[in-house]
Amino acid sequence: MRAQFVLSEIGVGLRRNLTMTFAVIVSVALSLALFGGALLMREQVSVMKDFWYDKANVSIFLCNKNDAENGETCAKGAVTAQQKQEIKTDLEKMDIVDKVHHETADQAYKHYKDQYGDTAIASIITPDQMQESYRVKLKDPEKYQVIATAFAGRAGVYSVEDQRDTLESLFQMMRGMNVAALCVMGLMLVIALMLIVNTVRVSAFSRRRETGIMRLVGASSFYIQMPFIMEAAVAGLLGGLVACVLLVIGRYFMIDAGLNLAQSMPLVNFIGWDAVIEVLPFVVVIGLLMPSLAAAVALRKYLKV
Image (cartoon, rainbow, N blue to C red; front, top):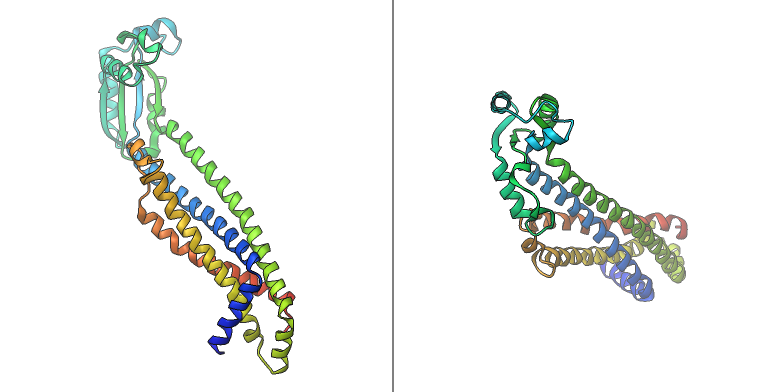
């Protein structure tokens, strides 16, 4: 097969259907950008889980006098020094416990004032209303339920809370955004495939005379179909490259500059450029193969050879 002939036919086909080719490029670019964004979002959730779950503590809040007077949970009274020591000793004996930190009521009050000092309720909170607690770091954060089962309802214990519950709501929201992005990507992908099929059909119809001549001189099916497939591949490749540019710009604008999330949210561990670079080849390959396969399937119907 002469490469010069194939390249010239690709150029002719792209010029004849310039508007539809442009629409294919845009549709492929948007769908693949959403696909790449969904992959990066999933990676971001994974990175944040690894980062925060490792730092999340299980908190065992102890009953104070205020709880004993006003609630049923601490009906047996405020926690005693002996009960506190027994809880600490039992915690340190557990194999799944890495570290145990005791936070006094005064320390809890100071932390509360540091975080919520500007709110109205902070002005009426007093140190005696704050609860002492044990902050427990687990070797395996997934085994929170073992701590909850062992200490919930125990004398002197007000509640057992896992900080992961708060983080999980954030991760659920991010996963929901990821699913929404995949749904939109699927819609854009269907539109892109329909445009590719229409482009191939129009291109095959406009060159039916040349195709007929090639049949008469004995050209193979592969030789006749290759220019049409390559047209779709070139359009898809351009769309994939545009999608890569959009992903790079999006990562730079949102995290490094523009919104500058890395500076405004220093406690969040964002994905690095290595994660983006790993996704880009995948996006380009899909952009190249997807239109090629769609064109090959369409040619079986619209180009009988």
